[in-house]
Image 1 (cartoon, rainbow, N blue to C red):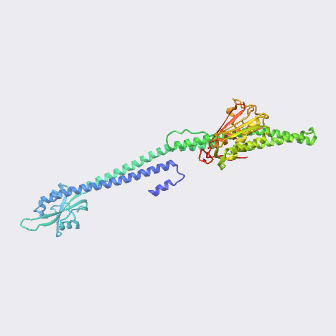
Image 2: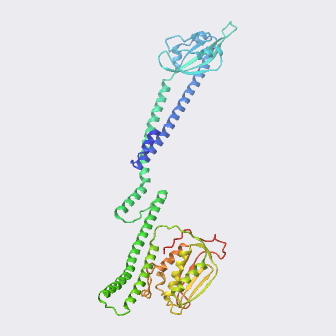
Image 3: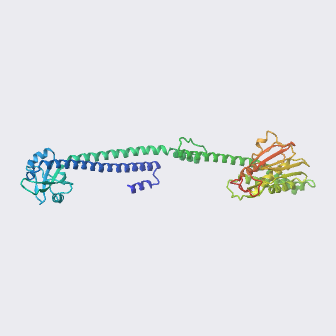
Length: 485
């Protein structure tokens, strides 16, 4: 059976519910078989034990009846014994066998009965065949008969037998009943197992259909969970994956659409300037100095185009680049970012005050994020304006004296490619603040935009860290994206 079960379960092209049904059926069949065999054996033992007790009791009564007249069996004959549904005989210690008179059934003696007659110890019970060919249950007990006028008793074994036909008939009925009801139980268990397997695997079937539907229609639609079990958890995980894929696809579509829109402007401008240079090379149509101005414009547009491509690559990377966080002093990161911003705004005043803040992170990505915030301040600051940089506790505030951010634009400043109406005429890709938000979030912090007291824009960054340079076990992040320059 085990080999057959292995062969059934090893067939990979057989449906799972069929294999489960077979497993349940085999398990129930094994349980029924073990229970049936045990019940049959226990019942057989109990019936035979009860029969032996009855025969021993009859033998004890008979020994009293024939005491003193053992040779003639107390006058008992075959007809009288058949009325009690028993037969008997005496086995004397010298091997002589005494049987009742008449044409009744005769028993065959064995060495067991002779041993009891000679030793007068114990009893025996066995199954044997009588003279009529029927099976009998036979017991023997020791019996000593002291006849009148004799000083020494004669030792016998009193042997009693009863036919096993009725008993065997009961056992056959029991075996047939156990076999019949066992087979019915196996069939019922198979049917119930099939129903359970079908209903239990229905969520998996729905998952399979959902995956096939996604493959065929390219529609990322979740499925109804239904239920409170492990398969429901699997369905929930599948739905979460579908929503994540749908969100990723939508972000990808939006990124491609926005990137196409943003790339179109610098490419158009570059093509126009290049066409002007080609036309001037053929016809000499440009005035003196215009050619150099166009080349400078092309160089600026190429720089803007390069920055836009770098920002797009940074935001669109879905593969997990292995990060290498390290303990850093945020003051060093801010000082490097301020130094780079000063080169872009030499006419501006940078007011910097910083307290120590130590954390674990990637200095390159953090420097790029703060550089983007400072470049934004440089871009919108008036000539001679003041840019304030404050690092107090675990918060960094960067403010300028520019026009500030309109209330309608505040909820969208960190969206990809978002450009306010005032900022559309200024250079930039609209991705800088989005990179800032992504980097700060990856380091376990947050960034907010608001209005400074001077009327300009103010960005507040919170990064988890500690003022103690030796305490590097404070809040840190698990995954920090690498920088793509």
